[in-house]
Length: 314
Image (cartoon, rainbow, N blue to C red; front, side):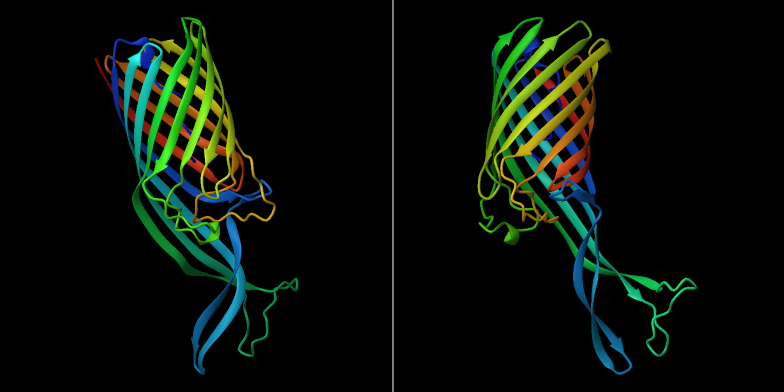
């Protein structure tokens, strides 16, 4: 989920400010995912053996049921931006993340009479009862990434901007195993380095931004390509709305890859749509946005709320 970013907030290039400090809060809730066939899955089928106590002693029952997913993320982001000159900007971001996962196993068992004969309705259909069994309850709080970034403007005037971006995501640990299925809960992060070229056309009340990039990821995680289109529009001074569509494509797509809800996806492809509002008052800036994933492969069906506060310093 590293490439699901907001549209750039107020461009420090156009101001007299040399520094920008920021604090961001990001909340995500997930209840389903997209499998390798691009289909949404709210539940995962699995076999479980359940233990029961009866009058005649302990007994067990193995059944096929559904694992119901209840997952959330919370990120606290800190960032610092420095304008070296009108063409060059350096940025540093830190991410503290909290993850929480609750899975419950739900199975349907056929209702039986005292002689263990399955009960049927008047149409001859077997009657079932649903049983929920706790399966996994785990949470994790950790510093995830240091994210340095540089932006260099190849062109920057009142009508057009052409920008080259280079960034890296450096995890705080490198303990992930080579076998992806045996990794820790949600993973411990991975090293990523990427470059992107952005072009922005500037009109009186609207701006159009096109971007394309490539990211290399370490360990078992596939490299990715990215393309996006953004529209920014305003009717009020120092306030604008923006809409963004962001496409991310894994360059490796093994047919036998299974989505593992407890771990960072290694071979994901998805489209992220983002809607936001940016407000500037003197040296203060507030950015609010919402992200939704309408299409994906081996990826979470993600709903994300983000709020960022920025303070500019001369």
